[in-house]
Image (cartoon, rainbow, N blue to C red; front, top):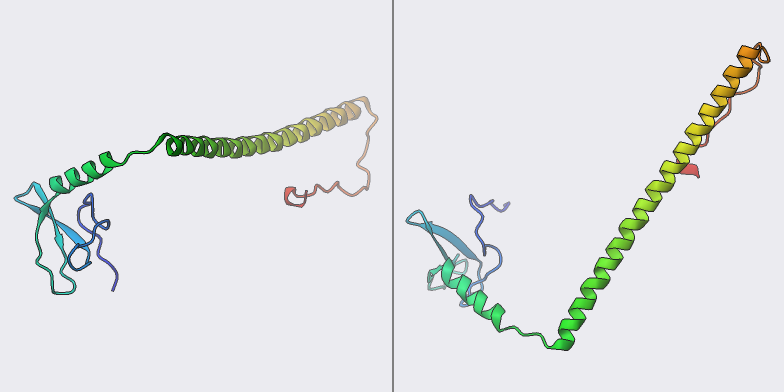
Length: 146
């Protein structure tokens, strides 16, 4: 049976489990404005105590504030973030350079075609080209084969 999509997105839905029985925690709105979380009682053995969202907010805030990184770990995190940013920037630059190279190739081809057409027009107007010769048309190789 597929899972139902909740009618409303709740902050902690899918992140918390019951400390007593391990079942999922669900949320409900009471009195039209208060969000309460409680156990789904999937195993049928839970006390189903309700907890207001604000209480959970404060507990999470206190836990996060208690986490302290020493200078060594903080420096490691900073370097990891810098390296990640540099790698991403290098990848984007490679993509841009590749796109620029392809654009330059097409511009060069367009210039060559324009030059050929201009020369052919001039020769035709001067009378040096009088008829179409029975030569096969040039074949251009597809880009994928390059």
